[in-house]
Length: 194
Image (cartoon, rainbow, N blue to C red; front, side):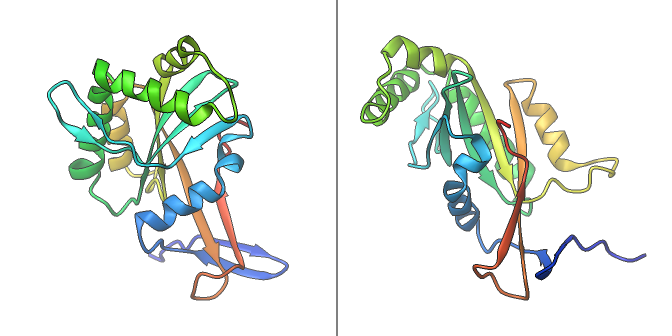
């Protein structure tokens, strides 16, 4: 049986699926294209802000997104499919969920967002709290695996986490011409707000 090879063909040539060297590399691409992914009336912060559960379990989301149209906060986790979904992703997202139940974490996020948004967008504490109360978790991942598989690990993990909070995934892939990453590349993803 032949292996399927993802490819994009344009007038300029063939583009092959790029394997990210690290999660950090993918995170940088998300920052670069955040308005393309999430829309213009959003605020994306990739500054690492550690949050804690009531019991003191700390975790650090890869980013925070405020969607001003939907009046919603999204906790962003950027992942590579090759990372352990059960050993890394499941516990990480579970910690996000429990940390957001901690009043100290909640109050700290209100303070952080008031400070970060004040230069551009004046929002009252009440408005920010309303946004934090209306929250979801987004996992941006390089591959969702084969959805035709009877037991897709990512789907299984998302189903478990969805019982605790609203969780969605956004696949983000990059295609390159030749063997090495260069300026001549193409990104493929589903725009979140369009």
